[in-house]
Image: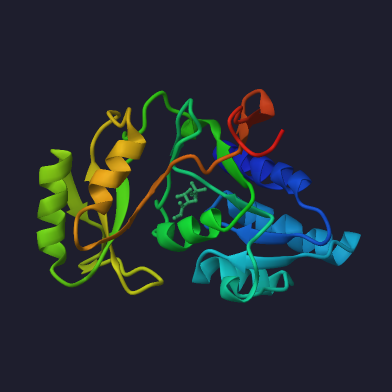
Length: 234
Ligand code: 5RP
């Protein structure tokens, strides 16, 4: 296991301290929260943890079923106690960029329905300003090139259609992903989010503003927990 992989595992497992029996838990997507899902499966099997989960992607759904986490549909329950998810970047105000794994739409719906959001990350994800990581934006396949051009005009930066080889990446929702190369310039992420959402053809943007309550971060000092002073977890 590489150093980075070991850090992801540490953070992913440490975040499970926020989960207790009876909870409805949003299960994020990515290579860090994968370790949370595996650990929750272990806790169900070995420690009698009783939870239900809502996955944020088909990949997480498959993993959760493999490790024995009972799943429910978000539409059939009245919200979630908590979601644990990864992030591509987080800034000093706990605003996030997400969507590196193309799951941002379901992730954002699940986060919106959760009473608290825990982010698991390694310390490469901490930034002073968002945007060095290309900002993922889910867009409709219809007229996607026009939407990409409109995004480029509004953001004044290069915007690419995310590809898998010769074909556009298709999300779990049948849409495409545009990646906006803004650079570390997103000092007003709420305003940027609204400007992007105003463009017809945009389904959702991977700016998660005022959603994250806690970051569980693994770095050379071990695992540290950073609590958002304006968040919902004391
Ligand atoms: C998927 C996401 C992921 O949570 C994000 O990309 C972080 O993933 P990883 O833990 O693999 O770095 O937003 O859409």
